[in-house]
Image 1 (cartoon, rainbow, N blue to C red):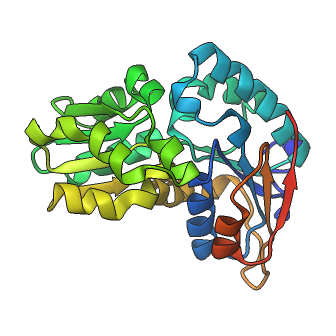
Image 2 (image 1 turned 180 degrees about the horizontal axis):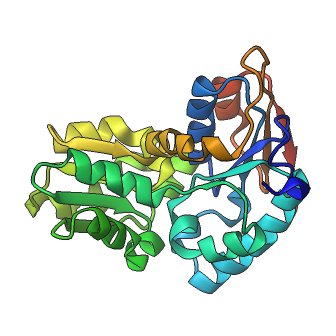
Length: 264
C-alpha cells in the first residue's frame, strides 16, 4: 500500500466522480451499503455533458479534475461516469497508478452478459461512450459472440439533468430499438437510472442492467486494498460541484448536506 496517498488511513474519503447528478444516485446507493464511510461526490456539471464533447477536451478536463481530487487525498475512487471510463482512464491511472479504482463499464458488461440468455444486449449511452466501443469490447471479453446494439442518446442525459423534455427525448432517441431483438438492456449512463420506469414501460420484459447499481457492487473488488472505517462510525458526505446544481434534488436525497462550489 502507498502511504503517501493515505490508502491505509480509514478516515480518508472515497471519491465518487461524475459529470452530473447521476453520480448522486451512485453515492446514495453506496452509502446505503457502506454508511460508515466518508464520501465526496465530485460533480463536474460545468462541463456536462461529457458524452457530447470532443475526446481531447474530455481528457484535458479530466486532467484538471484529477488535480482537485488529489487535494482530497482519497483512499479510493469510484468512476460513476461511463464516458470518463470509456475515454480517459489512462489519464486517471497516470495520476494515481496505485490508487484502488472502481470502473463502471467492465463490471456492467459482465453482469449483462451473465443475465442475458440470448446474448443480444442493447446499450443506451452517450455518443462518446458508444463511439468508443467500450461496451462492445468488454462484452466480447466475457462472451465473444455477444451481439451489442449501441444506441447513441445525444440529449437524454442533458434532458434528465435539466428536467426538460425527458419523455420526448427518450422516445426519439430510443425509437430505433423498436425493430431490434434483445433480452437485456444496459443503462450506460448513470443519469438513465432516473428514467428506469420509462425504460421498463417501453421495453417490457427485458433485463435492465443499471450501471449505478453495478458500480457499487464492484466496490467489493477493492476491499482488500483499503481499510474501511469501523461500522459503528457515521460517515460524512460532501458534494463538490463546478456549476449551479439542483439543490432541491440533493435535499431530497440527503436532507442537510455539506456542499461547495469550486472552479476548475
